[in-house]
Image 1 (tube, rainbow, N blue to C red):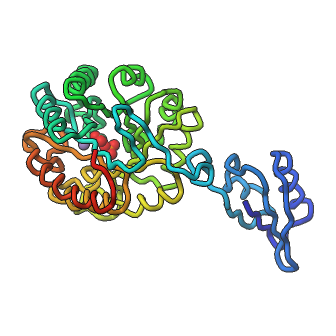
Image 2: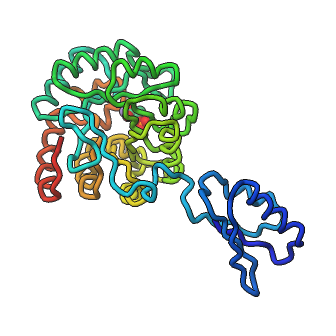
Image 3: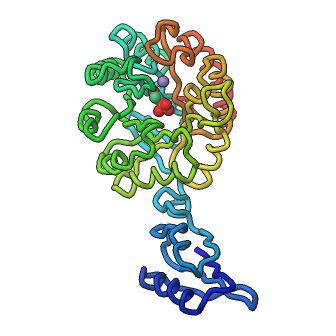
Length: 339
Ligand code: PEP
Ligand code: MN
């Protein structure tokens, strides 16, 4: 961290800044020239908040060199994190892992049909929401615990893993019982109490990017979970809110590249929530694979017109089969294995 001192700062005011930095346990290096007074703060500055220094009247500018996250950063760990779900499913390596299923778990027939479909295509991860974060309190809220139980039954019958969104701290124990990956929804990305509690869990955590979160804020949320003791974090780019209204969100495809440079954690793309339109899913999924995502989360439904949530962005099983056919040759070229 670099601290630039105001030209007209008094010696006492400068000393207050330097004393504070030393008290906090950091070393200082004076790198001033004749024209500007500058200090380098040496040590693990992830503990410092750059903005706080502006409380000192002598401080003109603070520039952060080291990222505020540590465990999530590529500097801390250079090799990619691999998340081994068992049965040969590994996220973060040469597999391109597809997490497929309806937005909401609705009933047994729907889930059995989807489960059998995934098995037929040799896909391994079943997604589905049992506690739905809906904008309206009048919209379908999900089947709750019954939904989780149903997903587990379907997954066990068809040899699948389960991912589902946890709504709150109090529900974590329930999720640990039924799911293989715990999803944190976009709206909960900065629910720090939830993130801390998930740091205590031994399940992998799927952290969706917040609706208006910067990449740094997203990685700071991953840091919360890792700081709590759980290193198994999977990032998910699911589109961000922009001024554009044609699509539900804007898929920030370059975020995949940014995150892969900044962090060692695996990153998944969700083209369904990013676009909100089923016609866009196939080409966006190809783009996500091409850009280097470690997998994707995609919503499908046997009858999207009758879906209780997100029908407009859900692919029919036939449309999803076509998408798979489009991904296969691309995966071959890239040396990735569709899982
Ligand atoms: C979901 O995956 O079902 C979901 C609600 O997504 P998001 O949190 O990205 O809106
Ligand atoms: Mn959805």
